[in-house]
Length: 180
Picture 1 (tube, helix red, strand yellow):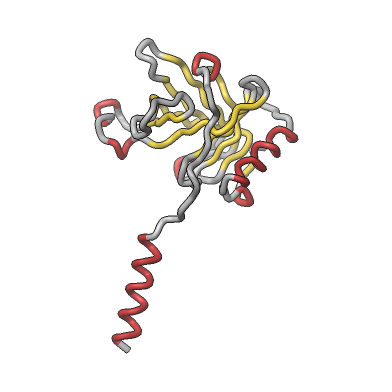
Picture 2: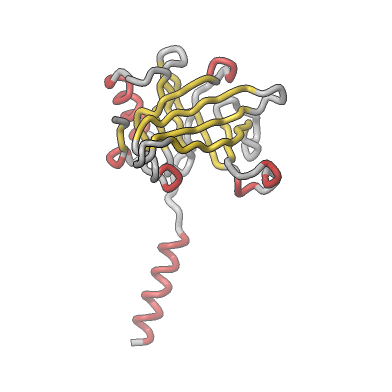
């Protein structure tokens, strides 16, 4: 019995510690951040804990700052009809070997914590469609995914094409939640 429990425990620990292995994730080849900033409306996403309270009208407003960082203001409507906001900052990813305008990292923790690597999350621009009218954003671990558009009402064909592209790259798009 002890041997069975030992094997079970080792198996569970191995399963918990192993990460899925993915091919390196391609990003958009060249992103002009001056064109990318502005307002984006969420059209689809993989559900995540930090947006669990959001029931609709989710948008992000990005503003380029003098130091080349990007100010982030995310907002969404919550169940009582009010809006929830999160202010943050984005910057070129520091973990990549060559600076790449498609590989950003974002934080919503207070500025005084910005020296801590764990407060920064990946924000990779995987694809831009329609001359900066649509953006597919994800993370290299395939856990987070968003389809964004400049218009509140997006072309369903373009959204589907971006989701198909994400699926080809290993994102679990069957779990995607679309904006209402």
